[in-house]
Image 1 (tube, rainbow, N blue to C red):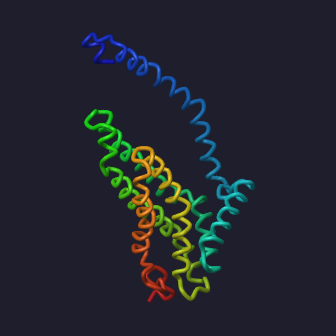
Image 2 (tube, rainbow, N blue to C red):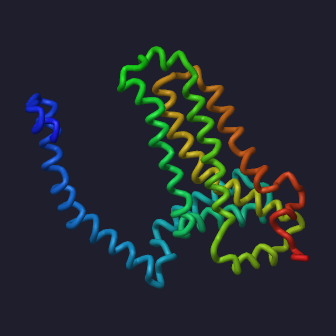
Length: 243
């Protein structure tokens, strides 16, 4: 708009952008004041109430049923299944976990810039982009994001509640570790990875299928190593005797 006023450029592009600069902010202010702010205030009130951690009956049954079915498929013991279902529910109800984890989805924005910006600036063509291996950047980035979902699942400000894990009758605490890992990996990373895979398929086609599969199956290795699951009895994270 300033360019149009100072340099007297009244072409269609400048007129459209000037109209948007004048009309959109008041419109968004009305939408924010009338719709978003009351909804946000209502959600804050619900979080502060005694029933904040209790979801609606229909939602609870649906989520619980999905978690139970997945647990039957991917877990190998009762203890692992119990931790799987508990982690699935806690990650849905814990507000702190959401605040630490959901920003990872913002990685989509720079990822889109990596692929789209060269096309918009005409530095490269779509055919040139398809002939390259830029999609590997997205796969490598997802490896890093995969760890954030899991790392935040076993970190909590309410550490006093961790007595539950020490009280569990487990010969190998690794069952609790792997049950929690499977829950976060299937609930968060898998849908996120599928979303990115659809975008990459739309640009590069089916020729990158082997790379996407390799990236998906390699993703668990980093958080598993970080959790110390290589130790069979899991003592690096779950110590029965603090001494």
